[in-house]
Length: 275
Image (cartoon, rainbow, N blue to C red):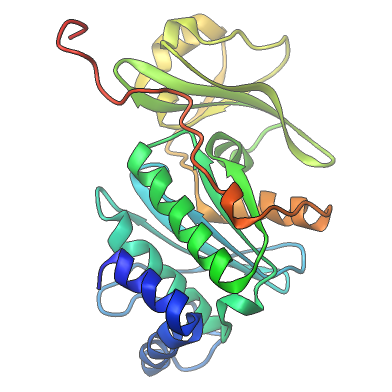
């Protein structure tokens, strides 16, 4: 069943129709609701990963080559995560169905929906924001847009975190954050630059993470100076959910149409002359 058909079912009949079938499949493979949400029909494992604020939040991230959905319920988190390649549209809604089905919830019972809005893959950003908008519109829920680089920083240890994603065409999406009492706060807003031209960091001890540092570590280190690189770190929906939980708890609410992609760049390929 493709993305448009699944969204159509959600709008026409309500999320419970899709979830009911998913719940039956899950229960057939689990001894109790306390079991780790695992794979069925060769799907990805969805382990319990954290404890946090008591809100019911669904979070989505399809901004990179990974696809993930996370659910926070009464202080606990669950996540489905898979290296998706180009299969985000096939994977995302089944992940949502699986998580909600195991929790025994419908979309209308959530407190809000969050999505990573960018920067990142143009197609990926459109998938998560469209699904998030559709579910929020259908259920009358508020949304929280979360920056992809902020979600990446949320998942990296350290008080000051530089983040970079591969933007293709020899460039990176770059931002820097400081972890404070209120959570992750931006020091350098998301920008697009060649690795040798990213903004310099304020004086202090910094750690770095993201596939941009994995792929352009030498050039970025030459620009930024000595910096500890935390390898193999990616944006994930559970980190989106943590940021959204703090913002929802602080009273932040947006209409569904606030989930729009933050592209940062305005083209996806070099021209023939540029190549």
